Length: 344
Image (cartoon, rainbow, N blue to C red):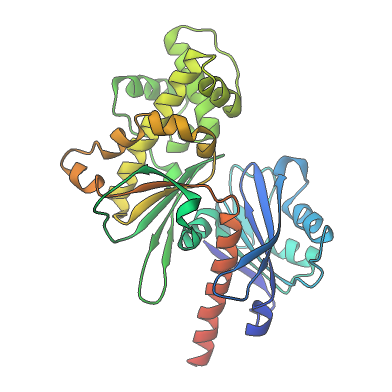
């Protein structure tokens, strides 16, 4: 997804200055003031906002700009879940509509570019340092090839970074909307329950923050337990603190099913270069994830096990990655535009 609302693309001198960059999800918007010069973009100022507390994305960005030395910023990049259709962003998880033209006009920006949030995160994985990741599945003989970035948050986001001689190509996806496929007997029973509400059950109906809460509720029904309405954070906390066996079972099923689904995505996209698990609820359950069936289920693909045993999986711990990715992607688009202009 790429959408531009602008009077022109910035010239090189302007693009090397300050850039407003945002990573917008269904729950939080992360906004940064990025220094665009140098080998890689650098975040000078950063703030995290809860989306539901603001009437729109324009209000969030204005609050950020008004709160510091951002008066000279006239260029912006937004990494946002969903797809752009004309001037609007199609996303069922955002609490408000997003209009690029309206935001550009409201903030007085010369240009505003929009990219899928996981496309930005995939782009930014080239900035990730070893100390910023936690190995989940290791390989002594890693392979070269495309890299998969996936993460359960308000929904399930996924993108693929395909390395090349002239830089990376990012394939944005709607993998979270693909059909959920069970492997174990319990997963089959869970899917049967979910199918009572509709003929299509997407991956993110289970493999996301809200999906974890759904999973907890369905397991309560299957176990004949009283169904409590818990938030994803409450389910996670109860599982990690071992105060609710049902929550612990739900999180265990979640991790195993996630491993299986990501293994499928690696095979579908040929992502032999590795997997980055990004953002969402995973950093909160890191220790639980390491002790779960995630890796076993990730590799349990019959004849393809030997391949998946050579695909490393790492958990990204960089909270500003989406902001950096949006800025880096913006600069890449600008460089491509400059190259095109020179070749005319």
